[in-house]
Image 1: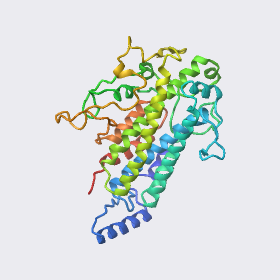
Image 2: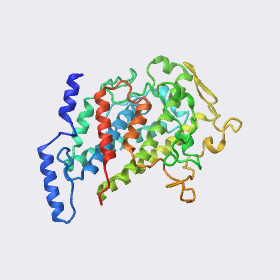
Image 3: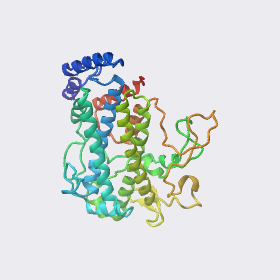
Image 4: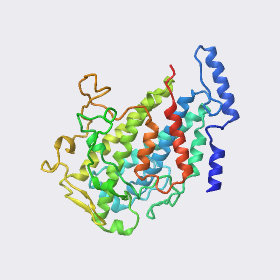
Length: 389
């Protein structure tokens, strides 16, 4: 642990890190900016390069988010997808596919394996682009990525084709499914209501940890168990991507540079596209076609029929209401009509809130204190960014 902490301090310390190349690039950018009539801010305690300090911090945090997403989606793709060979989806790791897991996912939609590969490919593209863009500005993309490489110490599923260290843990998830009712509510907005009280679509997923990938042959040999795992994954897919849907517009409000704003406004909608897809597939996990399904190892986890009007309020639970229902926006005091929106998009503490949500999800179970210090440090910097026009 001491060695890893020392490596962490040496690789990245936002209060004392100075890199000669970054400093020179930053100084040159300040001079150029002044000559052009627009000042550029470069903080000597952070590698901002030719970016404003806040813009660099936001992009570094988003790079961190995409590194973490790439790590978790790789695990899903290894077991729930297929190797694409020479097609445009040529994933940069071995994909074996677990046939029982793929079959269970296919019960929700026949194209699940392809969608998982697509989503994984997208996240890797986001990660690679943000890293390269930060490097092009002398703003520390490689430093962020290399620091995360030092934390790849979580175990793989024994069934995974790549027995490597992971950043994320998909085998102890407590999945918050309140996004289901949040996007159906026409009277509550998490940006406006301190305690909106959105109901869980599948309360058992939040009650205790469950796995979203198969871990051993006993998981795959029991049809009810592997279907529960696939259903858990479907709700977790949407949980992850709704977070991205909110994170990009939230942080975009703090960006100063127009090109950086363009990056956030261009990547963000792809996360929303992912969420829309997984929202639809999660609905198929709670349809009468599969019937009520209980976890054989945990009777408290049951996937019922959310379309049963005798048990559920259809305004809040109907499975085909996958487009954001209009709700209140901006201010409860100004009586605007309700509007269909992404929510939340409040920018205050957006990055720290994202880290808190992923941590509560169990995604980082088993990680070190140094890992949490690093991620929270990046989030704090991003949340301190201020729009400078």
